[in-house]
Image 1 (cartoon, rainbow, N blue to C red):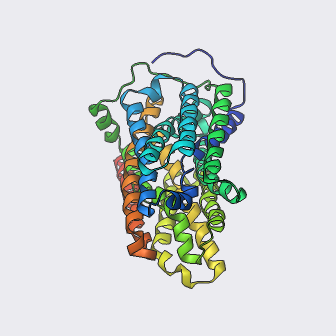
Image 2 (image 1 turned 90 degrees about the horizontal axis):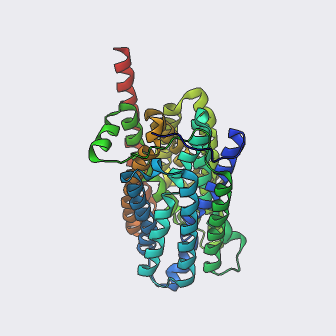
Image 3 (image 1 turned 45 degrees about the vertical axis):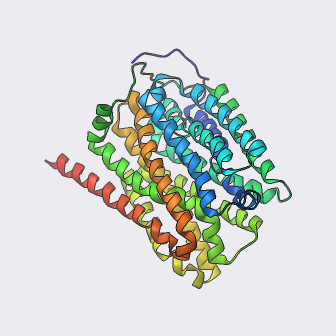
Length: 403
């Protein structure tokens, strides 16, 4: 491991973290930019919901490939995270723009979305690494805020769609490209934090992955995270259709407003979870979130029968709890690893977790017409299994410490 030369502003850690968090909001708007105009694409390209699932999975596959490349070659720990983040914002915005202007079928669209996914591997996990270079002492709160902004960034295209009713679907997508370029500029200006540690020899081999998973704290956090990921991205992809089933809404613009609200409220869940983690600990916060989201999955089929007030409460609880545990898993994993390997450890965890999302997204979009309201039961096993595996691992750690 080598020391790095200064490459940062003399900002307070909290101020720098706010810049990174805002850049994360803008950069991750690229993620679901296509999903906000799914109904337009289904009409323009003559595809069904399974086709939208295919396009969504192109991003997820690109993210998995990108994270694996970053991990195998140790890119996340060998190079300055600010430069990686900025470069990926630029390339992601470019590919998103090409999708809006030139894609006219599933194949071409999937290629551009795949490239966006690769670039997101240098925005989301590298953003976590960047936070650790500025404020490692407040990792739980900062990561909660970062994931909160990722959640808000995911919802942002739905807000753009709602606020620009008369725009074409291409214009709605292009707004996300502009956001990506602003994120690039912010991080280039900010630079890396004073706690940056680079490891020029970083590489991940099979034995290195085995070594990571031999660490009980890392393994239990990762397994809980995998269960959480089965539900999260499939839920976000299905939100417009789930709301349409519950409320009987068919107007696409109205659905965009509802979808933005349900996804965006997850950022509030992340912030609340980050604050509670300082008193309760990461494991307890993650466990409560998993339990609440599992309960929502189970009772969703009956929500159309209840009053509008109870429906609103239901969506608030599900929207917040479905993602509130995500930063807790990242914090647990980061704490379990040496500082010079945090980027690689989080990248591996992300790669495996997003591989799981590809399965749940494709299966749920294909089966939605057949299962209707009971599609939520397909998501239900994820948080339940995650809750069991997380707490079983923590119980084992506690028992070992007692001995």
